Amino acid sequence: GQMPGAARFVTSGPKQAPEVVEVEYEQLRQMQPAALEKLREAFVGPRAYGAVAVVGVPGYREKRDRAFKAGIDLALKDEEGRARAAAVSNTYPGWSGAPGKETHPLQSSFLFNVKEELPNGKVDPYFGKNIFPSQKYREIFGELVVPMHEAAVDVLRGCDVLVKEATSGAGGSAWSNRSLAKLGMDGPALAGRFICYDSGFTREDLLLEQRNSASSVVAGEAHDEVEQLANVSKTAGHAADGLASMRTHSTPVKSAGHAGDGLASMRTHSTPVKSAG
Image (tube, rainbow, N blue to C red):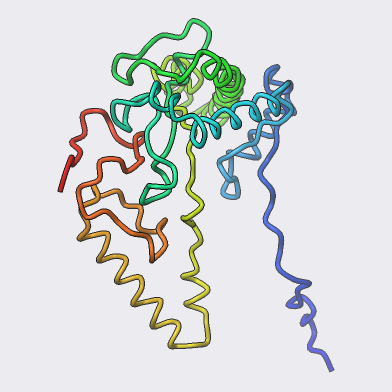
């Protein structure tokens, strides 16, 4: 016979994780109650992902497709354009990298300050003046980032409402003169980056599968490979890029100091970088 209450331990299969919350662009622009509820679901509570997808942006698909095509053409077909837009270094605006010749996947990219391309945008002297391969290229990416920035600021504006609700009462006055949306609007720079990933690299991580394998030999090999990879990342002069987990084990690593580690968005312009050896 079956023990009383045993049925509650029977499962029909693994539970599907909730999808990322989606909020309609127009509802968000008008800050409708439905949009605020979506933002609350996305950002409030222990089960919130802390991310939201803004959908229904007018013309966004076409703008994205044009920008992606322009970026791909620049990376793979337009050597002269890459030369015209060459960045001083990969921490400054413009093109950096050589597709198909890099030693890790975050190298080849086009970087620009989104804030400079917004209506009434200004050059940020710290970030550097944007440089594009052509005026057409600039227009294409400008058309893409304007609605993206507007949507992002609206998300922050909605979060301001949620924070005010959460802090009303005890301690609520501490937030009264602060605004995430204002912080987003007033910032002088916002890095926009079109990255050209090299198909010779993978982000696949089989460590868990190898750990769970019944074969102790495979587990031992995985351990050895992790140790070897760790040793390579420590000994190779690679500007401490910390990207070991993104490399395949067969990926060659430059032994000379590699300033072009593709981490411009994580490094200030004053950060010292190895230039050789």
